[in-house]
Length: 597
Image 1 (cartoon, rainbow, N blue to C red):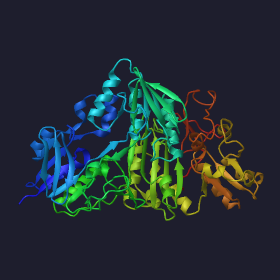
Image 2: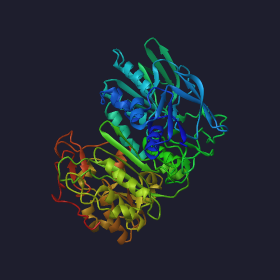
Image 3: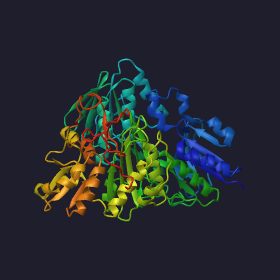
Image 4: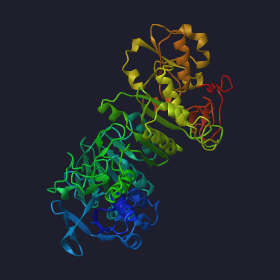
C-alpha cells in the first residue's frame, strides 16, 4: 500500500522535499498545501525585481503548480491553508479558498511553514504605505508604489540582509533612501570592525544611515508617513519598508503536541523529525544545530532549507539521512561591494564562552601586477588548536570564492594549517601564487606558533599609555599622509640601525599599512629582546574603524587627488586600484619579499 504524505508549505524546504520524495518513491501519494498562490519562488531575488535588475516577474517563479503536477505527479493545492494538526488521528484541517474547510488524512507529514515578517506593535504601523517583504504579493505591492510618480523617498527599517538589499535597490531606482537600524551596526553576522566597511559603502553612495536608533511611532498624513525615532528625530517619507526580522509561522501548531522552542521554532532531531513520529519539519520555522558552537539556533537561509527538505524526504522514503548542522554561510551585494561570512563571529563566540584568536588581512583579489586588482579585507577566527571557527570577507572582487573555500574547511573540521597548505588555482587574472586564503592561514599559523604577537586596536586602546611605544614602520611618505596620533616613525628598512631609539622597558606596539611589515618588525624586535605587539590589519583597519580620518596622498605624490591607494600585500608598495604601481619613493624598489613567509 502506498504511503500518503502531506507537505505544509512550499518554497525552498517544502518544494525540495516534495520533488525529492517523488524521485525516491513513484507510488507515494504526495499532497502539497500552500496558503498563497505561489508554491516555489526565488524569495532571495525579490529586492532585485523591485530594483529592476531582474526585469521579468515570471523569472522569480521557480515552479508552478501545473509544472509540479505534470513532471512530478504531485497534488498541489494552492490557496489552501493548514490551520490545525490532529496528531492523535493523523489528520489536518485545511481552509481552502476553493473547497472551504475540510480534513485530510496522512501517513507522514512534512512541515515547511516558514517564517513571517515581524510587525511590532508600534503606533501607526498599519498604514498602507508601510510594507514588509516576504513573498510575491508583498513584492507586487512595493513595486507598484515605487513605480508611481511622486514616490521619491523611502525609509527602510532594519539593517539585516533584506534591509540592506532593499536600500540598495531602492537607491538604484532613483529614490532617496534612509536606512534605520536600532543596533549600533547593520548586518549582525559581521563583527563591528568589518561591517564598518559596508556602512561606508552605503553612505558613500548616498544612503542616509541612522544607527543606534529605533522607531517609536509612525503617522500617515496625506501622502506622507512621518517616522518618529526613539531619539526624537523625525523623518518624512513616501514609503516605509519594514525589515526588522522574522518569526516562525507556527501558530497553527498550538495544541498539536509538536514540541516548540521558546520563540516558537519547531524542535527536530538530526533526521528532521519532530517529537511526534512520522512528522518532520524543515526551513525557517525550525531550530538547527550550529555547526561551530554545537548549540541550537535559528538560521533562516535558503541553502540549509533545501538540504533539510531533501533529508526529510529521504527519511520518509526509508533512507537514513542526517542534517549535521548549519554554519550560516551567507553573502550579499552592497552596491559595489561583496560581503560574505561563514561560521561564528566574535559576538557569538564570546556569548558561548569559546576562546578564540583572530587575524585580519587586506589582500588584493588577484596578482597585483595584473591590471584591475581590487582590495579586500579578510578576517579569520580560530581556536588555540588552530581549528577554524569563522571568517568574514568584504571587498570588490573575489570575496565569494575565498569565503567558500574557508566554509569548506570549516565543514571538514579543518585548521589554519589546512588553509596554509591548500593548493588553489592560480593565474595572474584570478589570484596570487599565495592566495588570500593561504595568506590568512600563514598569518594565523605564525600567531599560534609564537612567531608573531598580534593585538588589535581595541586592545591597544585599553592599554596604559605610559606602558607602550606606538611604532609606525611604514615609509616616511605614508606616515606624513596620515598616522595614528602619538606614533613615532621608523621605517622597517631602517629599524635595525635605529633600535637604540626604542625603550626596552616598554611594549613596542607596531603597525604598518596592512600588518605584514608589522610582522617583520615584530620578528626583528623580538629577537633583539624587545616585547613587541603587531596590530592585525594595521593602519587600514584603523581607517575602516573610524579611529582616524581617511587620508589621501597629495596629487603631486601619485596619480591624482582622486586616486584610490592601497598597499599591495605581495610587494608592500603603494598601488592605485587601476593597477598602476608606485614603488617606494625613497628606495625606488620593492620593499619586501616574503617568499619565505
